[in-house]
Image (cartoon, rainbow, N blue to C red; front, side, top):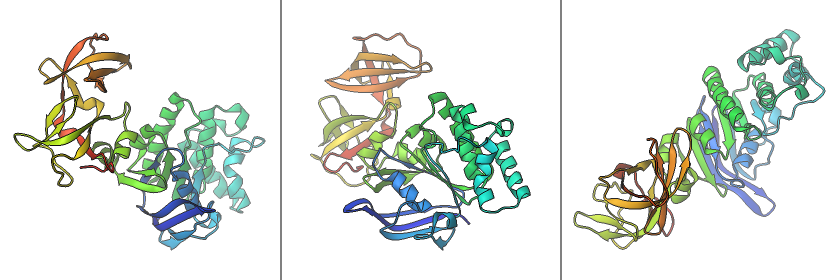
Length: 357
């Protein structure tokens, strides 16, 4: 078993509390992604699991054993950093095997592990090259291979793809997911890139200010964000927000704003809000449907062709909303279009504290 159990974790740098009372369980074999903006504490959390950052309070268990104050080498983890951190004078084979040779493993065991990792990462033909002779993607694969040869129960990956161009990121993202399926190891991955989080994760942990905002599958976090921060952080283009109030309608509560009035009688509320509450309506761009029979109209402000889809920016009563349109249509600025909303996928947030209603 190589799961992780973190209880009441607190980390302070001097007087500054970076992580406060954090609890987190990572199941054996899970691919958990820590997602959040820069400075939210996700890398600090990862480094504390690795033993690179001292813990002020709390417990870190790896595979059922208390490793809170254990040395990094005793934790049974493999770590991949944002920078490749390869030895420039060593070949790929020597870079991957260096830690094993220092640990005194038999030569045939070292060869077996390096050969296996090189085959999985398609590095077999590059084993005698040095880092300067490799592309960025190949160097990152070597860094991943160096962690894999440890045959650790837990792998920690700290933004390993952020230094690569878009095409290489997409390719290595796919390789990482296939690698996890092959190994079945526990992986904890840090990123600020929502595309990486959504495509790689078994579960996503969204962090802000050293605290966990929401934990769930990519679909759960995307479709039912617990607060406005999570809703706004995920999505490209981001969720549309309309400020308004709850009003008493003919069939129940309704959303009322300068842009539109919307019946909420079929909406499932998380609590029991009342009329007069100041709220924010959240609508994903793909949940706005353009069509001649829509109950509202908006004026096209801008059209962004994206290849397989278009992003249309609609002005409705001074509020601008983004719409993802997959149909090929010739649209022009100033054109008036009718639209409707997917009422089953709307989100409502309290303006006072941002929580989901």
